[in-house]
Amino acid sequence: MVSIAIDAMGGDFGEGPVVEGVLQALEERKFKAILVGESKLLKPLIPKRLAEFIHFEEADEIFAMHESATDALKRKETSIYKAIELVRLDRAQAVVSAGHSGASMSLATLRLGRLKNVSRPAIATLMPNIKGKTLLLDVGANVDCKSENLFQFAVMGEAYAKEVMKISAPRLALLSNGEEECKGNELTKEAHALMKKLPNFIGNAEGRDIFNAHVDVLVCDGFSGNVILKSCEEVATAIFKILKNEIKQSPLSKIGALLMRPTFGKIKKHIDWQEYGGAPLLGVRGCVIISHGKSDARAIKNALFQAINFSESKLNEAIENELEKHSPQS
Image (cartoon, rainbow, N blue to C red; front, top):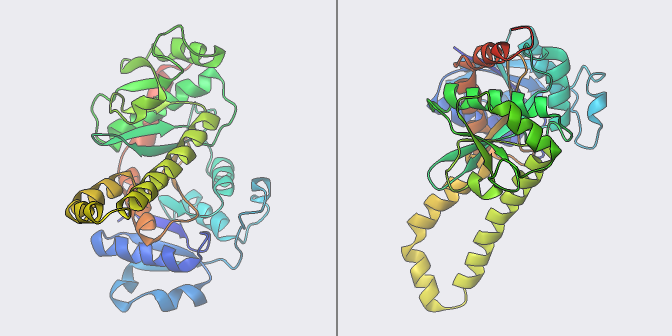
């Protein structure tokens, strides 16, 4: 049974949604949940029927959102530090946190260590497209990148698509300002030349290709990826607000909206970031899932499912094996 360490105190809304998400996940799939935080606050929230699957790791400090990620290593009594330590000590295979993402990344990199031949870990996230999902990375771990970093992101993203998303031959592309090989800045041109080594690389792609299902994995630097991610989250919210405002303008629109309610529900679910739960940090030992600070119980539940799927795969082994083929020593 997979053991998952959960930073129970790190989210914007406290321990309530985190614990509720754990309970919802356990109703559907059984795993060992280690709640890291103040047990006196957590234990009263656990029903007896699920108590056998839940364990506690005491942590009486929270790494606050306003703190600098560089201080995370010093704060050894925080819930995120202790959650990461459980993975390092092999007491858990994965960690899920909706807390300070910078602290999660720093601690994972420094305490768990990088996989062999990985120079920088990358955050990967699933984006909705017209048919399913597109994996986008990096979305924030690395603001400044070299072409070698983008190549490694490509290898890691391709491995994730194969091992976790179960896509046998994922279409891999590089984000640029045009599909032609000559397009892009110096970084993307250099990265393009390196990625030609990968058999599933189909060339450059534009931002629209995230959503038209033309690619399965799209690689970019963390600055561009984070801007795309945050923009898309707000666009989805804005579209639904505009629709609601327009529907209110006439009785006929209201009737039409009632008839379309099931369809609207399916669309909303497909593009809702909470359905994806969190973003895996690829390239570190073990499994680290970084969730949004505003995650509700549903998002935590889905992040836990991501952690289970990751932990039950051979993803990290696949990443190391593939990078070994392309290492200078090989």
